[in-house]
Amino acid sequence: MKRLLSILMAAVMLVSLFSCSRDEDIPASVTTAADTAAPETAEPENTGTPEPALPEIDFEGGDFTLLYRGNGATYTCSDIVVEEQNGEIVNDVVYARKIATEEKMKCKVVGVENESPAAVVSKAVRSDSYSCDVMFDQMYVQITHAADGEYLDFNTIPNIDMNAVYWDSNAASDLSVGRKLYMAVSDISMRTTGDARFIYFNKYLVEQYNLPEPYQYVYEDKWTLEVFSSMVKSISEDLDGNSKLDGYDRFGLLEEGPTYFISGAGVKFTEKDDEDIPQISFMNERTVKALELIGDFLNDETHAIGYQEAADGHDTSGFAHVFNYGRSLFATDHFLFVQNGAGVSNQFTNMEHDYGVVPNPKFDETQEEYYHLIDAASCSMSVPTTNTELDRTGAVLEYMSWYSHDTLVPAYYETTIKLKRLQDEDAPKMMDIIRDSIRYEISYIAGVGIEAVLAKGVSSGDLASAYAKQEKSINKKLEKIIDKLTD
Image 1: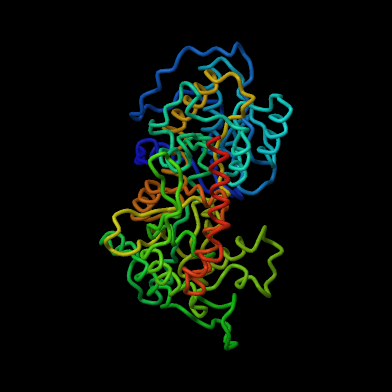
Image 2: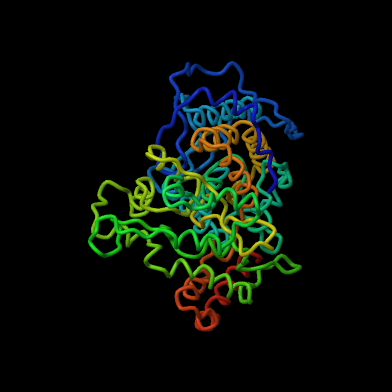
C-alpha cells in the first residue's frame, strides 16, 4: 500500500490551528479557538492526486446514506459523516468532504450511527428492504454476513478503481477470496489506520536505564526480535518494595499476546494459491523459531506483564476497560514498551515524559519488510446486496476516497499524529514505515483459531502439538468460510 504520505504543505498549513482533545477510539481531533465559519470552498488542496474521471452523476437531491458504527460502541467510525463544524480539524475536514460530495453528486449525504450496523443491514437484506447505500462495521463481524451473501463484490461495482492511491491495495489483496472482495478500506475513514499494531516506547526509561536508542536500530536495519527481547529484559523493578512484581511495579513490556509480534516477524497465517484461495501456511521452521524468540520475552514474568495482571488489585472504575488502565500505567513510566495502534495515542497526550514509536521488530536482519497486522475488530466498508444504484454508489465512494486522500489523511495523519502527538523528528519517519506495511489476515478476521494455536505454541514451546490438536477444526472452519465466500 504505497500512499502519498508526506503531504507536508497541507500539514504545515494545518498545524498552527490546533491543540489536542480526547476521543475514545480514533485519535482525538485537534481543537482550535480559530474561526469555525463555513469554508469558502469545499474543494481540497491540490497536492498532486488527480481527481478521478467519473461520469456525470445527479441524485436530483436524493439521499446517499452511510451507516456506520457509533452510538457509544467500541471501535467507532467517527470520521464518516458530521453535520456541522466544531473547530476540530478532522471533524471540519469530514464536514467539508460532505459538502463537496453533495455539490459534486447533487445529493444529500446522510450519516446514520448504530451500535451494530451489520445487524441492521442483515435484517434489511433478509426482508429485501433498503437500509443504506454503504455500511461500516468491524471486519470480524462483517465477514460472517459476507459469507451469508449479504454484501456485493466490490469488483462488480462500477466507477471504483481499487488500484488508486486512495484505496488500500493491501486490503483489496488480502481480504479477497476467490477474487471476490466484500470488505474494502479506503481513505474515507482513518479508523483502520489507527488499528495497525506497532510499538510505543518510553523515552524517559530508555535514558534512565542507559539503553540504546530504538530508532537507531531501525535506521541500521537491526530492529529484530532478539534486540527487542534484550531491551524488554533490561527492565524489572520492584517500585513499591513489597518483594513481588505486580501492576504497581516496572516492567519492560505491557503485553497482549503474541499475534502481532508473530505477524511482524513475517509469519503469514495463510497464503493464497493461484485461484486466490487462502491456504494454511504458518507451520514451518520460521514460525517455530519466531515463537521461540517471542516466547523469550512473553514468558518472562519478571520483565513482561499482561493487562489483566497489571490491573489486578487496582481500582479501574474510572476506565472503560483494563486495556485503558494498563496504558495509563505506560503513561506513568511503568513500562518501557507497549504494543498498540495510533488509535490509543490520545491516552498518552498528558504523559509527563516523552514517548516514541517504532515498527514491530523483524524476525532477523535478513527480513526485508516490516509488517503491521490490523486488529480484526477494526472497521471496513461493505455494500448491501439491496443497493441497486451501483453506478452512483461507486462514484460517491470513489470521489469521497479521493477527496479524503488530500484532506483527511493530512489532517489526521500528518498533523494530528505525526506533527502534534509525536514531537520528535524520528517518529514521523517511523509512522511512514508503519503505514506502508499494513497487513490483513482473512483467517484472523474469520476467527478460525490459528492465533490461539500460535499463542499456545509460545506458552508451551510445542507448536506441533498445539496445531495437531486443532488442525481439523481450523481447516474445517477455514474451508467453510471460503466455500461460502466463493459461492
